[in-house]
Length: 385
Image 1 (tube, rainbow, N blue to C red):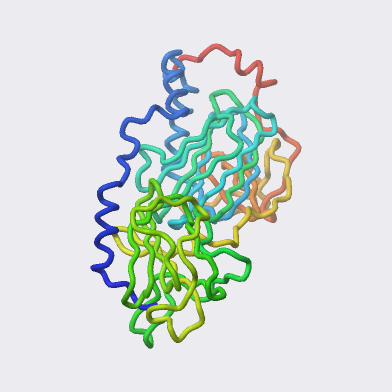
Image 2 (cartoon, rainbow, N blue to C red; image 1 turned 90 degrees about the horizontal axis):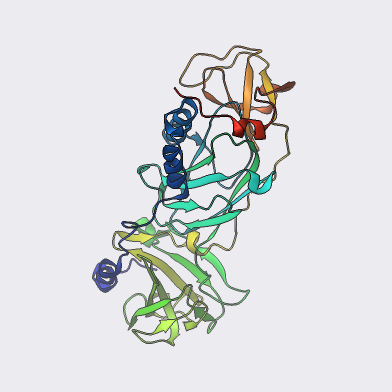
């Protein structure tokens, strides 16, 4: 389908400007912030352990480990010193990130999980309760994000994290025969322009449905889109565009629920010489977005992971050259922090985080040095710096 004329976007853009949510200006403190205040109340924030906990929290944001989604990790927070885990990844608008965080010891290991945009780590875009085993985040801004995991002071234990990718809204055409056959960026008019949406082919008169709860902001006829419907999802800063409809079954200003029929698939407009299909677009005040991540039915699950023992030290088989510092000598003992499908994430004696393939290390029988048991550790009086 041809690019939608810019002047037709103006009503949708004005609507976006008027109803953009104010954001988290007056939100309450996150669980991580509340816990930091408790440390302050008990004067633990001034002890060596308290200062180390705060430093680990900041270091996880400043020097996160890069990962690719979907992702699964088996991790271990050891009691030898305070630590936090920072995981950096990129995400696309429209994706729904589904996080699963399970603790081997159940609620005995409170973990604070906070998601930040890497460009703005002063305030998280999502904070989960310490007891949460699952939470999700609908991505609206493209870019890099950092997930920070951190247990309470003096707590240790094993956990498993998985991050999968799902669509954030429903598929806009009903029935099992609908298929996406032309995607974002495909060449049009001999390469003079690019496709600004996706084409979903389906038999003529197949219902086109609301992909989310929202309000119909436009019902129009004419131009390259033929019979079109514009739908603004509730609480969102984007508008959905349905084009080439054979019939429109809603009116402007109508509120609809996800799954309600808004029209019937056809080939009106400049699609009159093509098989019937729905041109589906997503528009913001800044321009169009790739709609596929919003509705992609091919969900991306976290990969399977072979369980490893993380309670004991690892030994480096030979010297390793690590970016950002000198080589780590062979036979060096490392603290295992996590394992994923690629290998180990470990900590060198100088504090550097190393991502190493399984073949580079071997487990030892020596446990990570700690006090006899966590209960004793937690009962220790605060050590003043």
